[in-house]
Length: 428
Image (cartoon, rainbow, N blue to C red; front, side, top):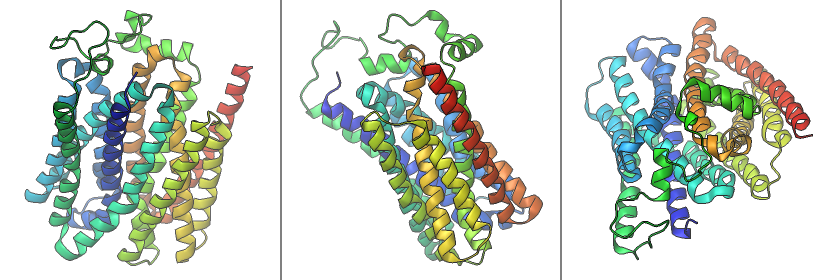
């Protein structure tokens, strides 16, 4: 049973990580057009490079599962925070004469964020147990505060001090993960000693419950040794937990939409005639209303009444409407409404995609399903940035790109309806 301090620490670590990951990712939209023109590359290429921060993060998070037995959770957290910070600092101080330089430093930051992703999710699930969906969604709410707050600050620094100083500022922000981890170490060093449990003696070498969970040594004796094998566990997951398939499909669609929305929303506003200072506030509006979307997800999760019509069908329908109205009007108010509607929808939709996982798989298969989910996140993020950018390059219009996102949201509505019908039949 985790103590209140352990729960608070794991929640703070997860929240700070998401605030920085989401906020820095959203900031890339501020410099998208400048980067495209500076290096003479297409939107699809630059968008994919920027998206690597999250793509590499989720790929590395899936890989960490197989190497974490060699490291303590504390060391992994320090490593993740240090790499994420190093990536931004490198971009701030090293002359960027090629897009490959940006790709390298973005990938370094992405790997650091990926280590933090794995550590913070496992820690949150371990400490909150049945309350994991509520804690997970609440931490995501903090992430949308990052979407709302970081881009305006980044844009101000770019306009007044240059892009190098602005990226350095992101590095300073990201170093907060290292500071949080250091404070946790100090609090444990000077706090009251934790009593030994499960037969481990004080000063012994036994791992804590969380360390065992991180290294794959689960306390559940019913976990079969076959769960450590590659492809067989995938087929086993599908056979034993069939609703995992629609969840992964919806996760891929949601991350695709999020990546495109994150990178291309501000440039979309600029393409419709908004000045840069005004277009940035589209991100802020979407992020703040995204916080409301997470709040709407927390309430039903807390009372154990989250259902698919609320968490999946409703947001995809709202997303179709939000994108649709932006296709027929260039009014600033309409664009703000689109930003708010899409931010709310993607946020609420993401609550189901992330927090629903413990509901569709058993505890024995949670880590394997989480690793597969990380791969789906990475793929959806990369394709969302790259394919949406390809539409912009081919049509020379952001409007067609958001029309494609409208169609994808409509597909998401259909998948969520079929998922709901299947789950209802499966339950009956």
